[in-house]
Image (cartoon, rainbow, N blue to C red):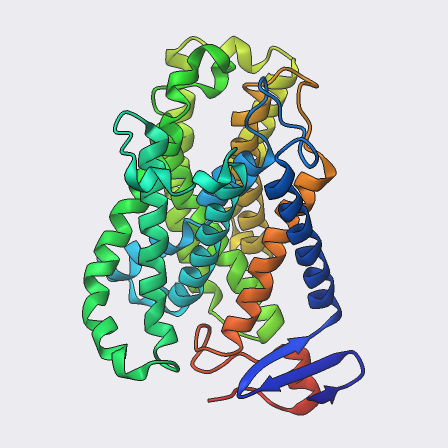
Length: 395
């Protein structure tokens, strides 16, 4: 172990490197605390760590960890669609980073699902009990299969360093994996919207629509490109991994065109259902819907097709607003739309678990990119370590 300045420790154990920073120390502490809360939840059930009730069965773990997590992890399939199906090779530079982010996203979604199972020790039942009539059954199987596919796709990166003798077999299987990996996310992204179709009587009308499956699919695609932009910008700041602004602008504009179609369809749907008056009712539901619409769609569209989008700050602002808008949409779908005010608010322990899952994802991302070729053409080295040692890459 060697010191880098005062606050950074560069750990090297048997060739595996990891840099310990104050922020990573904080993330580790949050992750450990969340593990302790999870243990209490598995031993005692929901009562001590959540505010869930029979009247409010869906809480933060479903709304954020699952519903939102699946959408935000859509960067992998949307980028793969552009790179491999439409042969937009200019986006290949961000493909591996998008794949890694999606893989971690879906693993954390699976953890969120596992946490929300009342009798968690029966998690194996959907594998043997075939509930053909259940939308959740289809979502469970699609997410499980797609997470497996993502793992196999990422094996291309892993076997460049570990198990090199199977690398060529992974490369041969990759085209088939990519095709399968494009089908399953489209199925479960739309099926998550289908879950709400049967809850028409429980939902505020502005959020219910026959187009919900399509809305969920379209939003996962345009937020996917936004998440790729956010991940790339964070990698640039942390590791000095430079991607031309033009590439990111073109990628986000592909998503923005789908978002414009999403907005047009949504406005048409509201008019067709005679719900224009509800938009301006002045209650909490209408205000939250308008906030979601302007913050997550209209303002970002104005940014992405303006000169501001030619700058990194403009692209980052657009991407953060889009991601925030989709998060707000998924939270609104569960809480604002279905629950009466004050009927449920997440406990501090629910927030800690969700923060812990994000922390684990961030730490794993840092470890992987520092030990495998994910961003750039070599192992990533933190920018501040580069400044202190002059080290820029490890091959």
